[in-house]
Length: 548
Picture: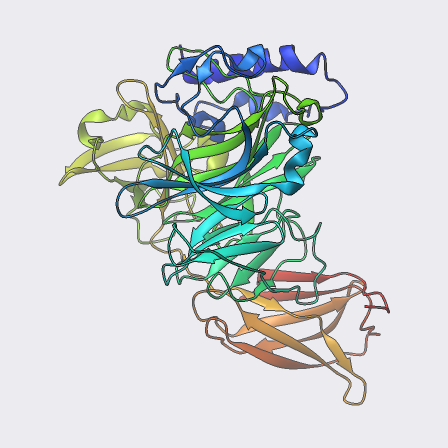
């Protein structure tokens, strides 16, 4: 049976088994009608693959919907309830899971989570089973990452642990956060981190604000003032952000609606939302079609291959509503590992920007271990172009192909690609000759994947000189060009001028002559950056209370 069908069956069964008896605890979100038209591969959720074969056990804790199950997938124990965490690999080939948990016998059950302990667990297999090797300390919702100097950071709510290796010893510390005249959206918890090309780190907080640290441990500085999540109804939490060799990715979960959304970005600040579910109940399925119907999948984390592609996702899962998981009962939680379709390595060969007049688009599909594009691909199934086209079965079709070494160069009819000037990673969908999903995002030779990123502080007015001063900093990874800056308040232009070229992390104070419009240092205002008349960035500052 088709894997997408298996997942859909799992979702339907989960809804039937659980939502009817727990109507006050979940909210069914209305899906856009266009989602019904998505083809296989159009949803991020289509990338989940069957769990590796393991030890199938029925006589174990959990609701009927999660038994029998693979008890050796991820980490689970009868005496500990696990939650959160992600995996790092060391040079010896071992996998290290940093996960939190609490005694299953605790009277409050799942509500014991504020007293979580962070464990370091190890396995020889990416999917587990993981066994606890040592205890790191108190903390919840860990996420581990490596600094450029090799040290390991394990973030937990309100702090972090740091060590020279995965084996410790661990030292506890706290990050420094600089809001930079911006409101902190929903506080600073459930942080998630992505390494940038220069070794700096981009962080997204629970509320959807974006922050940058020069090395991952030095102060995190906020560069956005609005959440970057989809503009839809939802109780959002559990963001997970990562960067592959091409672009940034983010998944955020609506915990009440039990649905997650998927986004992509060139710079980590400006995002596009792809249609369809990123994940929801029913994604943990066996090769034979059996589905482990966990009630909730939360704290999503990714394990990336050498190219940054997602090889596996792991989740905290629970078999019932959290408040019904009590000490010494039949309910609990674990961390589960789900393999992913990693996608293809693609690059566009056209040197000039693709437009609606581009007749042909050439795409290199790179060969790699276990994949021979010249022999494995069903060429007639391929579609290439904007995600707005290929996710719905449209897009450019194949005109011809030719071998180049072990790679395959495929020429597409460019007139149907749907690629627009703001495209930074066009998408390919199709299947191999065995019917397996093929997908990937292609690099464009004319796109700067280390673009400049200007960010301003709130403008200040010098009444004596009748001028505004604005501090501007380049948080991007390449030098900026001279850029026009426009300051507005109350819908009127107050001042405008030029920001000189800035190197990465360089900042300057721009002095702008006020143009006569009234100005208030506490009222809401807007700073816009433009190049050649095109908006390249916009900073919005809310009304500032006098007590701030």
